[in-house]
Amino acid sequence: MNIAIIGGGIGGLATANALFKKGFKVQVYERAQALRPIGAGLSLTPNGLNSLNAIQPAIVESIMSAGSPTHTLTLKRSTGEVIASEPMTTMQQYGQPMLNIQWSKLQAILASTLPPEIIHLQHHCVGFEQQDNKVEVHFANGKTVQADLLIGADGINSVVRQELIGDGTPTYAGRMSWRAVIQYPHEQLSPNIATLVTASDGKNIVLIDVGEGYTFWSAGVLLADDSVCQQASDAKARVLEFFAGWTEPVEAIIEATPEEDIVERPIWDRLPLPHWSKGRVTLLGDAAHPVVPSLGQGANMAFEDAYELAEYLSTAPDIETALNAYENSRVPRTEVIYNRSAVRGHDSYRPDSETTFVKMMNPSQMSQDDFQAWLYSYPPSIFH
Image (tube, rainbow, N blue to C red):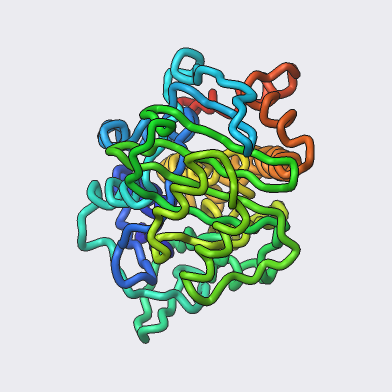
């Protein structure tokens, strides 16, 4: 089976690894000119790491070397007082750490385990046409390719999704974000620690060690308008103004970050779909089920998708059966995560956000304990 994947991000590359290992002929098409570093970090939770390990254990070995496990999560007020500090026990509970890594390093690791000739840069998908026995994919550079199956892994603004589903633009969640990765030594930025700083006026910033001396910071603010600055200098000035006077090292690390390294983006999501496959085309990751980043599950869900889709395609008698099984498994789980992410994201910016974060760190409700166990104990071995 010839499979075309649109999107060379971490979801698309993980899927390519999973399919390649199963013996499929796979090609990845990415619109960017190069796989360049971007100012982002991400957390890999036990369910995501277990999925990657099931795809290719060597990937997880490389990630463990490049990233940083969180040993302690600290919650502070914007004035500096420590509200709570808890050990991170996912390793003891679920056999995998909460691992933080630079997005671009993870992308490079996933790309390095694939034959370089299957990754095609400067290929911006502009549409596709389905026929009974193939899919024809069209690119902005004039190229057309044919495949037996097309997988849209091209993110929240997926071209494949618009052609397939046609549900328009994503929904603004009422929050603007700024993020960057920087080497910034500071006495309050210790290895293996994540610090969340919150205020009662709808502002939060998280500071996370992502390994090799780098810190990932991500700031969020309630804003009615989702328009972004046209100049990098304006975006930096904007986030500095929002977090002026906050406890160290918040203001200092933003000030030290080069303006061109700061990514300013609205927080978006989309309502869950009952189906995301038609014929020989399906969706994966943020193209299928984007969520707000309050639970850090975007990448982890994509890795679950990648593992399961490859398993179903390798065992089902035909594409239709495989895609039906993929949806039947993934739609209910991702909908639960969407709902939980939306509620947590909303509560994280309320005036009593402090209470929300304390509960998150030390769950006092059985439903929260049960949810975490259900989320992190995801078993790729269900297929074996």
